[in-house]
Image 1: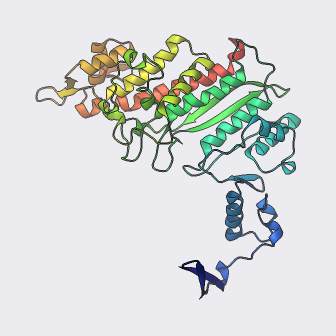
Image 2: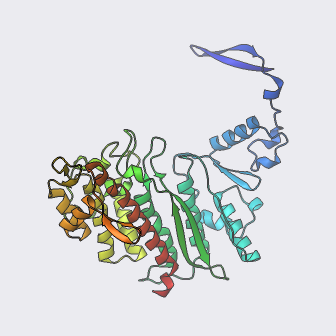
Length: 396
């Protein structure tokens, strides 16, 4: 049995109308003693049930305490706003401390894993999981930032970018090429990733690498009305890099590119020009030279422009052939290939049958499909290059 109240408002008075409600006994949970209010570790609760867990998370969240332990797990409630709990001052609070000596925090978990690695000389793993919008991407970045700070390899040289800075700088590029707005999250990672960070026996950073999984290819060419394609496409039309649009043969209007303008083209919580600044600077920090960086931009622009390439049916055959070559020439120039050979590869690709190569005819619908997979190759090559560079940065 449970008594609930209903508020009725009249001028300056609040009148409570008591109403009796009856619940099955199996749906009623025990209330924990007051000493467990805002409990830091829910494994210590006297009565552990759904209601007590949700209540504890709620009261802590309202007190701006978004991290709560549950045994070995750390439960995070996304506040969808910036809290000042990720500064270097806060890092110093957690360095060398046991988990029970400091308030619950993602960095306490990171510190525990780091110390266990050093003491036990065994690899450690952290699993960051949750539904869309739960904060997986942001918390992953916070873990990398913490480890980059506590495991710094030494004093930074004035004119040389440190390995720690290079590892942290991978985030803007990965987000630009792998994150997008969805109906539930403005900055949703559209691929899974397994990140390995490497240390010396003394606990100093030596590099990192990444395995990426299941990039959402369909988003490149199709978006729902309330969603958006990958951030990099919208950054390409921003003014931070003055000659970006001219060199990449782009116009000023995103709606000129059908692949990336089927849904939202702006996001209120994201400044695309500022994000372009972060992306461009990250290329420099990681060590991309001028040509490599511009090759990434040009290939990205080529993907956008592919949606405007025109094909037509050849006579009464189903065979596709180029129609207007205006956009095809642009794509070929951006990719650095011969336009006629490129269109031949689209319309009549060669496939291997047994031990021989044969030419395969394509319909207009079939010709359009390859560009849908092209961006995956760019993203795969980009992420692989970034993290392989970090892994071997000391040797270059």
